[in-house]
Structure formats: C-alpha cells, structure tokens
Length: 230
Length: 406
Image 1 (cartoon, rainbow over the protein chains, first blue to last red):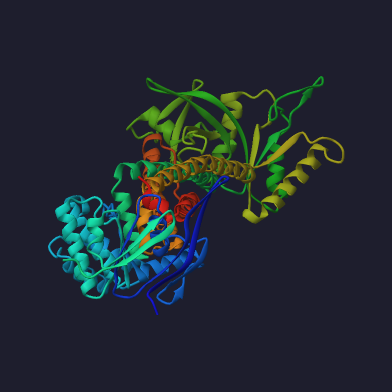
Image 2: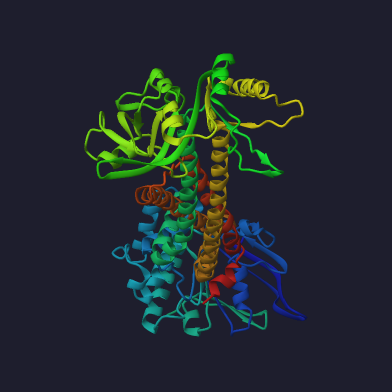
C-alpha cells in the first residue's frame, strides 16, 4: 500500500463564468521513505497539487488515499486532524509565530494534538536538537537568521512524527549556501526514513531528491526517477 | 484550554495600549452602572433610615382646603382642627399611642447678640415620643408646663449651636418675639432628611405658650396640625380609619359631605419617595449600561481588526492542525479576557467613585453585591456576545488564503 495514492485528480476553480482547470486528471503514488520533488512553472498546477496533498484543499473530483485513508471528501475539521497527525509543513516564508519562542513554535502542533505539557516540551526539545538549534530554544524568530528560522519550521514539521514532510519552496527566501544546508538536512532526514515532498521551481533544489514530478498545464508531464545525487 | 488561555493573554499583552483602550469602554460602562445604582440605592436607604428615625407609624392630620366663595385655598390653611379634636382623638381611639396637636411658625430667636431664625413648634410633650426625639442635655417640657403655658423652650441641636456656640444653653434665657423663654433642653441630633433639610434646625415650646404668647392665633383653640402615632406598624391603617371616623363624627362630615380635614400617612409618602428613588436608580443604571454596550462594540471592533491583522497566524495554526473550534475559542477567549478584566477594573472604579461621591458631595451611596454581580455578569455577556462574531469570522478563514495573506 502506498503512503500517497492520488487517482485522476481534477481541481476546477470557478470565478464568475470563467472555469479554470488547475489540475486535469493527475494520478501518481508515493511510497514511504521516498524523497520527491514537485516541479513546474507558475500556473502549472503544482501549488494546487501541494494544497491537496497537504489536505489544505479538496479536489473537485478524483480520489486521494493518504496512508490508506480516503481523504478527498472529509470535513474541514477532519482535514485539520489529518494535517495535524500526518503532515508536517515547511513553507517558503517560514511561517513561524513571531511572538513565540522557537520552542513554543515547535510545540504548537502537539498542543492541537492534545499532548500533555511535559511530553510536549521533551519532544520539542528533541526536535530542535535534531535540527541543530539546541542552543536557540528561547529565541524568537526575529532574533534568528533565515536559515535558523527554517530549521525551526523543519523541527515543527518533525515533532509530531508525521509520516510526510511537505515543503513548499523551502529555500525560496534563503541564499544559496543556506539553501544547501537546508536541503542537506532534508537528505539526512530522508536517510532516517522520513518521506519528503518538496515543491520547487529550481532544478538545483530538485537535484537533491531521487524522484521529480514535473507539472505543466495541470497535468503530470514527467515522472523521473534517479539515483542519489553526486 | 490552559494553553489557549496563555496564548490569549500573551496576544493581549503584546498590544498593551490597544487592549487597555478597548477595556476602557467596559471599565467606564461597568463603573458607571455600579456608581449610578449605588447612588440610587443610597438615596433609597437614606429615605428608609429617615422613616425609621421619624417614626414609621405616624399619621398627620391637617385641615382641609377651605373654599371661600368658590375659590379653594391651600390645603392645610383652614382652621377646622382644634385642640378639642386632638383631645377627642386621644380619648376615643384604641389604635393610637400618642396624639400631639401642633401649631408652628418660623420665628427669630435672640440670645445676647446672637439671633437665629428657625421653625418653632408649639405642642404637647407627646410630640417628642411620636417623632422619636431623644434628649441630649436637660429635659423635655412636661404636661403641666404645656397646659400652663410655661415660658420654656427645647432647642434642636443646630439651633442650640448657632445661638450658644460652645456655651451650655440649659437655664439660659432667650427671647422669641420679645417673650423671654428659658431653655430647658437640647435635643439629640437627627441629621438631614433625604431631601437635605436639617431636622435639627428647630425648637419646641409648650402648645399654650405658642398659642397665647408667641403666635397669637386668631381662632382660639385651632391647631395647624395633629400628629398621631399608631400603636405599632401593623395598626397604622386601623388608626387611620379611627382618626377619620372620630373626626367625621365631630365635624359632621362624611356620607356625601366633603371632609374638612386630611389624614396623611407618613410611611406611605416616604415609601413612595423611596420607590421613586429606586426607579430613578434603575433608570440611571439603564443609561449607564448603554455605555457598557458601547464598550462591547469597541471590543468587537478591535477583535475584528485583530483577526484581520493575524490572518497569517490563523493560517499557520490551521495548517498545523487547529480545528475551527480551536480558532474560535482562541479569539472568543481574548474578547472574554478583555471584558472580564475591564469588568473587574470597572467594579473597583465604581466602588471608589461611589466612595469619592460620598466623600466630596456628601451623597450617601450603597454598593450592593447584587449590582456588582449584575455588572460583572453583563460584562461577561458583552464579551461573549461581541466576541463571537470576530471569532466566528476567524474560524471560517480558508487556510490557503490565510497563509498567503500579507
């Protein structure tokens, strides 16, 4: 059984009389432990695909099996639960709560999961140490560099032991050196068994992954597998 | 839940000035409600206290409004009540404890180079019992002195103070309308009436002295008023019936002929006054609660702004698993915290404002626990009511759009 299995996904946006087919019959599957990049130009449908994969949106038609469960027709709150337990998000703009410390940011998914405070703290510390920020726990986002903030976001994605880490342009706001560091971290995490999906438009970033899904005009154009990068 | 509370606290603290200004609406509203109700309750309490001080079983009989050639005169200006009426009342009634015929007039009292104008009442000694006067120094005048027209006077505390200052008035002789009178007693002070009249600015003389020597009434034996007291509070209406019956018989009125006297029930009048004070305070409270409502709208306004400002934060929370209800609870709790904090501060403000009003204006105020509970409950309600819409709006945000919001 695949971890992710999407079949014939269609997403139509309707604005007034204009119908926009953002996704037009997309099917693929991802096994546990894969490191997949999703590529495409803007307007290719990759962002829509990522929203659906992240359970932030539901397809107009088609089926989406996540960890064996059909999620394409769930209610808002059920989707919230799925996001909380199955998916760790890493965003381009980091999306940390600016008033909270690194530790509090990482704890957030566990709060919504209803985990008791003591366990929460221990697991958040462990996650921050894992991404190399053991000495930055009490810092607020504004007191950290972009790379550090993105590491906090990665820790937040890790902390709930979600089977999938979904990254949307994770290096878009970072310089080349820091981008490399973050991608190396992803490769490491993949080596530890985490499943990673990275949405990007930079071929350099896609090179870190072992499989690339290329989108164009709402369709899956290419599904390229390769061996580990040099 | 505890976590949500902490989050709410922090987000309010991160915007201190805004939170404080928002609370101000509720603070003023709650404070105003409590102060207004306290003023009203104070006035009611004052009146009730006065009733118990003046004697709650009192009936006042005054002459009717005589008509001369079809023109009605002022009520109480007739001369239809006499000393004999008073004597008949005390002789024939069962429900009366005391009967005091009175004549009164404002007059000047002179002692040495001091003088003071006050209300001088001529009556029998029973007036002291009926009106529940206590003696402070000296004594009341006696039945014999009243009948014999002795030239003695009992002063109210204010009168005594203004004429004699620190001097002991007992045994001193003062002059009323050039008649020398001996001061035999000073009354214990009673304070002000609810409408601000000094009850101690007064003087009592024997009835006959007043009739014959001081006021020289044209109609002999006529009195301006008969004050009677019932045996106890329950027999006031029985006493009123008796007084009417006896006087109707003596004056040959009733049965179609209009009474030439009027019986007034002190307690009823004061009760009515207390009632109107209460209505007044309710009215003031209602006006004040409008400001509480305005405060609530302020909360709603700020919460709406806050939801817009924090759209991205809401998006983040939703992306990592916050349910609709989590978001709603968070914002509702913030609104509730604002209004509860405002309510508590408002209560403190209201209590201190009441104390200040008592201190500076001398109005008596009474902060009742009921009004505090009510105001607090109302502010909680305002928080929930006006917090709900912004919270609901926040919970309906689409996470994708919220995350993209700049």
